[in-house]
Structures are given as structure tokens and as C-alpha cells.
Picture 1 (cartoon, rainbow, N blue to C red):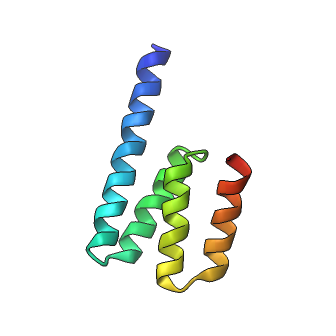
Picture 2 (picture 1 turned 135 degrees about the horizontal axis):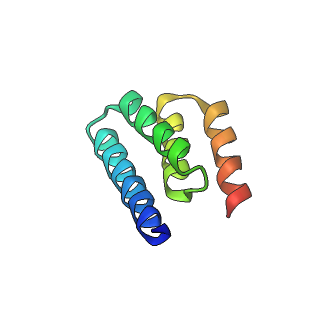
Length: 77
């Protein structure tokens, strides 16, 4: 049962990461930020999601929020 739960979490995080990247590529930075933020709530130690959230904050011009998010990545990695 735990293996199944872990698999569901990994699949959800992968979906969130992909969806955020698609929105970023389309220029929907606000939507990408919402998606990455949701992903970070589901899996707070997911470096890919947090790193891309930080990049999205930078793209939006939110340097302080990007720096905070990069610090979270650094603390994990």
C-alpha cells in the first residue's frame, strides 16, 4: 500500500511539473506559479518544482520571492 501511495505522489508531482512548464512556455507565468505552488504544497521537498517556481518568480520580476524559493531548494539539496 505504501508503494502505491508513493507512486501516486510521484505521478502527481510529475504532472504538476509538466503542467507548469507548459504554462511557462506559453507565457502564462501567473498560471505556472499557481501550479508550481500547488505542487510544492503536495511535495514540499521536490527540487524540480521549487526550482521552476523560483524561475517563474524571476520571470515575473519577483526577485525576493525567487530568492526565498531558491533558498528552499538549497536547503533541500
